[in-house]
View 1 (cartoon, rainbow, N blue to C red):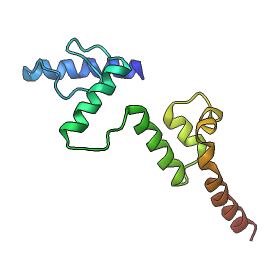
View 2: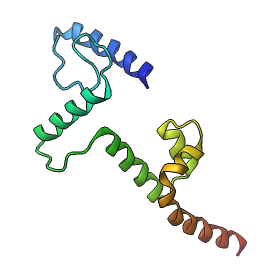
View 3: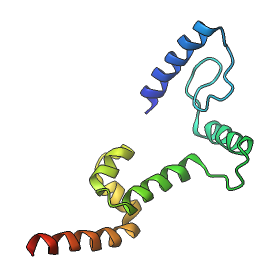
Length: 118
């Protein structure tokens, strides 16, 4: 992710130079020198953006990530896919954090199995 963010910083810098904009307002992950920010700073900026948008229920980046993963699993995407989407090294890591959602997934898979077996 850090590599991708650094590449994004380079792309943003090139685009800003084209249009003459040197500001960083609205950029969540990079500073004025186009360096990747640490988690504390990005969370602070994320909260400011949410407040500017008038949101009353503020969520952290980690909370947002967890919410997305939970929704993917609740909508019956496979644990393997969600694990890959989150960038986990293997699906066991994902299982560890989202095991509380998996009984629902098991019920869905049981129905699929029964349909297959006729």
